[in-house]
Length: 130
Image 1: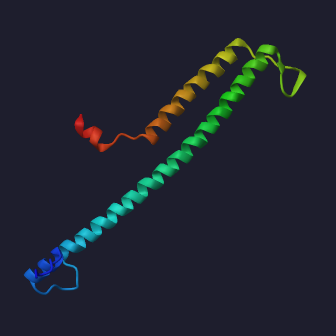
Image 2: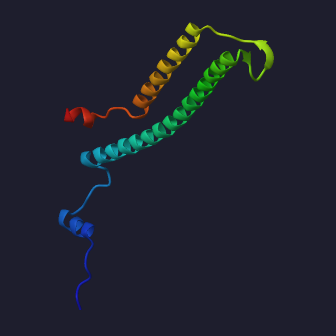
């Protein structure tokens, strides 16, 4: 009959002799490292969830904003407030409409730039490659 195979830890315990129940410096360091890694993972998952929520909220604001601008331009073109009352005269000069469309376009591009940089930040790995 062959002798049963010892597990690797039992072999190591037999080689080293008695071990203490208190963690040594290396074990304590590994525990701390594992704790920091798990906190980092939890932090990143929370950031992802918050970024998704933030992105959807900004998207809703952007859709509302553009809808109002389109409504103003169409109302100005038809010379009346379309939804509220056709009897109310509404007209904007060409320079006001140009300013409205220009600032709206600049704000939309700015929003997308800021949101994109927030949602997809430059990582340290990309910086190291340069």
